Length: 254
Image (cartoon, rainbow, N blue to C red; front, top):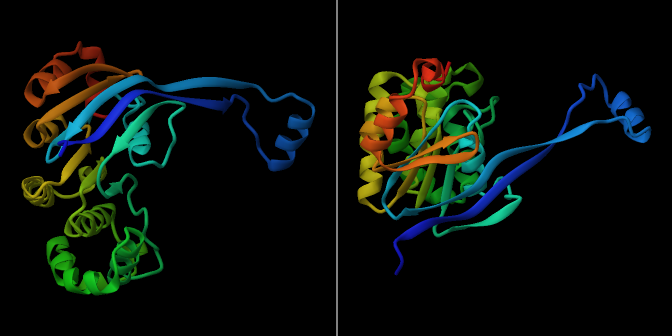
C-alpha cells in the first residue's frame, strides 16, 4: 500500500479577472453588452509538483499572495486547477476559513452537530464525541451561546476541536490557529502530533515560522505561485528567515 496520500503533479491555477470596478449589477450588464469590460489573467500557481506521505505534518510558507491558500483549496477540491492533476487518498477535513461550516445564529453545541454532519459524520458518532470536543475547546458554558457572540479565538478553538476529534485522514489548516491563544496553540500542536501518530496527514499554513519549524516534518516554500524550496522543516525555515530585511514584513504577515 502506497504511503503517498497527496500527489500534486504539474498544477497550474489561472484566474480570469475583471479589471474594472463595477458599482452595480446594472452597470456590469450594460458594459458587458457593449463589450466594454476589460479582463486580465492572473496565474496564482505555476507548474506545482510535490507529494505528501501518510502521517506527515507538511507546512506551507510564503509571503502574502504567494498562492498558499489557493493551493490548499485545489487539494481540498474546492477549486479545480486549470491544468495538472491532484490525487488524494483519504477523507479530507479542510479548515480554510474561520467559521466556515458554522451558523452564527446557532449555539456552539448546535454547530458541533451541524459542522460534524457537513463533514459526513452521523449523529450517533457526534454524540459520542461531544464531551471530548467541548472539553478540548475549553469553551465551558459558552458552548450554549450563539457563536455570533464568539471572538475569533473562540471560533478557532471550536473549529479545530471538531475537526481534530472526528479523526480525519487528511486535515488542512490555513492560518486558523494563529488567532487562538498561546495555550491553545500548544494544545493544538500536541493534538496534531497525536493525529500524526495515528496516521492522519496534516497540511498547515502559517505566517508564524516558529510554529511551522516546531510542528512540521517537511515544508514547501511558495513564492509568486512557484516552488522556491521544498525539504526538511529546519532547512527551509532557515532559508526563508534569511531573506533580505525588505521581505521581513511579508514573513511576519504584515
